[in-house]
Each structure stands twice: as structure tokens, then as C-alpha cells.
Amino acid sequence: MKFFLLSDNIDTQVGMRLVGIESVIVNKKEDLIEELEKVLANPNIAILLITTKLVELAPKMISELKLKQSKPLIVEIPDRHGTSNVGEMINKYVSEAIGVKL
Image 1: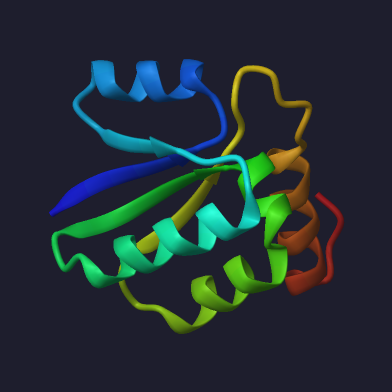
Image 2: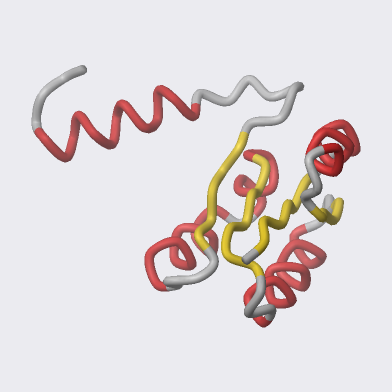
């Protein structure tokens, strides 16, 4: 089982390649959808890493895939330029789910 990265920048791609993770750089929604279809068709890919900027290109589609697809596991990662608040988003979801502010 493999990891695979869909990235919007070369810095993230280079970093992941250093640890042996294959990747593709995409910047347009159409290219993202095309690459997602390829990844979903590949039975060897178990975990798909995708940068926050790419998730923002097709948020509804990515959310649906996360909920409906058992494989690959789709994990959103911030890139080095990102100002995303992935940790804050996780806290928000957990707080809403359990009804307690963290």
C-alpha cells in the first residue's frame, strides 16, 4: 500500500519525494478532478495526501469522497506557504460533535 500526494506547489512535492512519496502538481480544478480519478482507480494507493489549496478548489467533491470512499484515505495537509487552520478546523469539528468547547 502506498501514499500519494496531490500538491499545488513544488516545495511540498520535493519534501514528500525525499521520503519516497510519489506526487503530481496540479493547479486547476479540471486537472485535480482528472488526477483524483486516476488515484481512485489505482488499488495500490492507500493514503492520498492533498494540500489545503487543492481542497479549496473542489471542497464539496473532496468532502463527498472522504465520506463515501473507504480507500484511499484522504488526508488534507497544509503546505509551507499555507495559512490554513487545519488544527483549528479539527478542534471545531470535535467540539461540535461532543458539544464541549476544547
